[in-house]
Length: 303
Image (tube, rainbow, N blue to C red; front, side, top):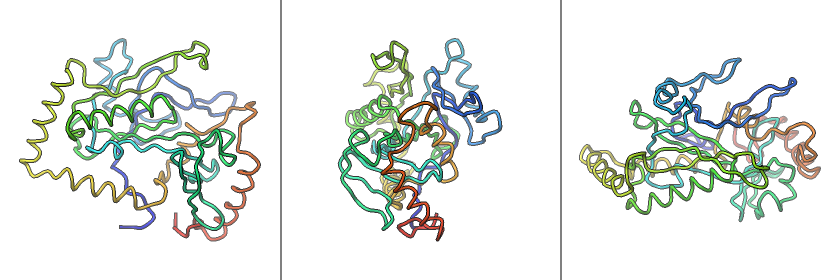
């Protein structure tokens, strides 16, 4: 296996609840009140819709896709959803600092260092809105590919917190059969004082419509037994996935870096905090100079 390259689940397409729009010559992220399932192909007018988007939308109320039937690829909750505080270099798309609120791995001039992580609001290096919670959820949609997934990316606290607790709970109550549970992504909305009464949409994970939790657990047990009889080794799959994620210091986003930065880490003009602090700016400039000189990360891994 190539060292320094995170081996992540195969991705067939994207699930989003927003899009990037152009306003006054500036491309900015715009939230939506429904799901969109796209392929991995992007044209000048945006991402090309995946055939599953049209298929699922036919049965959706008023054509709004607000639920998506899914299954998880792994029984271990944290393998399906990876979430950390992440700071990206907006120019190169490289992760500069990734932490969990206790410790972080930060790219510095002398290499990758392990440092304390106080979180975005208390960290001098991450102030200015570039450090955010960043989550990636891989789910299976449809039955055409047993190992292929669709990825949902988010920087929303509500989505990350809700998905994390749901995955953990379903793993627990199913007796570790999370991968076999019939579930669905569900879009929910709420208003807060911070949103000034405007609905804020986030993603939840629930048992499929029309089923009770006990029925879903029974279904999971039957499906698990069927796969075991066929010789499907779920435990080996999870060991392989865990090793792939741990093969690199930061989860690789490759040539999608620019799209991730544009959709989740861009800054609106006029925002007084639109950009990193001077401390972070100086640090980023120094690292860019070093990286441009040898074409390698500070830790020596080729990108």
